[in-house]
Image (cartoon, rainbow, N blue to C red; front, side, top):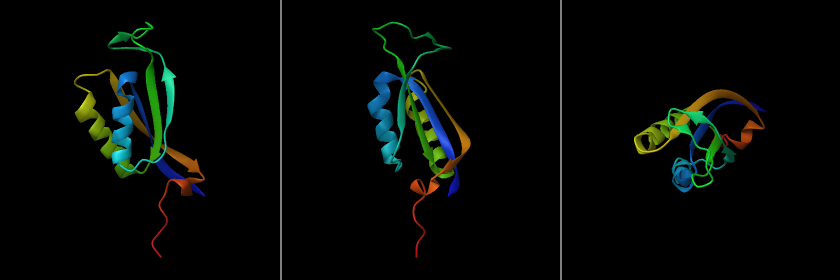
Length: 104
């Protein structure tokens, strides 16, 4: 079954890993992928071993959850940390894994 969902991507300082995963869990997110990433942005290059690499967290959620996650990330992290978040529409095969069963 193919389902339309939102892919939410969060790129952040690795020290925020635990806080971000708690935020996802508080909105019922049950799965995610974390990747170590590097890059350059408005806050410069994060390139030293001491700073550590950034993390990228990807998750698949419905529209309402994506909106709540984006609002929560902006409110909690944007003022004090190097964080970016974005979402995009995706079509997911095996989408039933991400959609709760319909009430009988």
